[in-house]
Image 1 (spheres, rainbow, N blue to C red):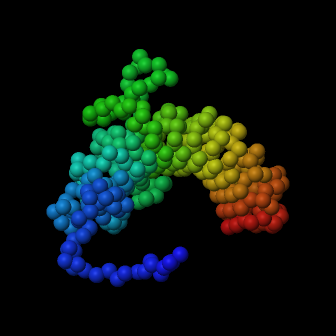
Image 2 (image 1 turned 180 degrees about the vertical axis):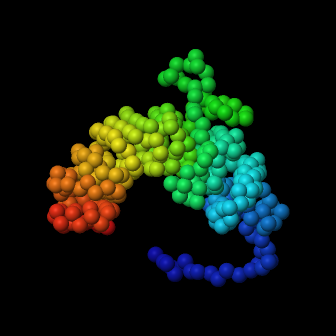
Image 3 (image 1 turned 45 degrees about the horizontal axis):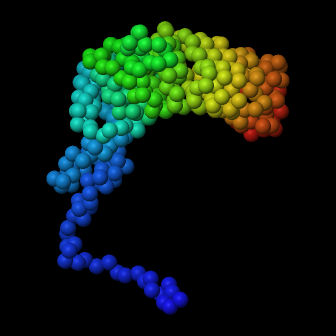
Length: 368
């Protein structure tokens, strides 16, 4: 074999007459390639590329598939002048105008991620509804509404935004052959096809009111939904949550929901992780993949009773206990899992002494 590898040698790159040193070679790429490159940038970064040259103006509108409207810096400014309500109102208007302007310019066919992060409330209801319609029409995969006051789930807003109810648009259509839906209380009352919702895989609602009926609808109809988080809902219509059937749900978090009293999970074969707070009635049946549980509540014994059927196969368990009802019965039930489970327990000083003195210290655990 004459020559072999010696035939392949590295040649030094030099400037040629075809490509002068100061020439913008990136702009010589096809529009499709440029749009693909810009699709990896965040919203603000992509928008700034319009300053590169005339050829780049507006390309980001077709490229960005991750619309993250993060205004964390502005939220810090608001927190610093909390005593001036007019300042918050002014910033809300600016934020809404910013989102509306971007959406009016956006031309991409699909959206992978849509995130709204600002302290919005009922006054922005119509605008947020329109944003949701836009996101669903673009086959959004991940949807996040973060409206928490101070970013804290316990700092409740007086008049929170209400996540719209999804209703069958044509009441004459049979349930098994639904073709279109509408979202009520919107300015346009626009109709969406059910297929517009089928791409949703992750939904996070923080500081947003949502009803139990709407959550049930989301889990029942959005077959690809794997990640569902609801934080800080004040809705009186969210007193119970039912997860049942062949749901694709893998992660479920229901925390700091003021009126939530009951969680029932049955035949959720894909559920891996569950997190909830202050729920008095919890039923978990046929959840074979559930290995990670995080619970916060008043009574230690009630928590253990709720999880009794799962204790021996959990891989990770976190408990935050606010009341000193640790007793011998609950400790005996709990001691079974020390050897096989990573356990984190947060107790009062009294509970801590009682728990450590009565429990075998054999597993991987953290008690504080």
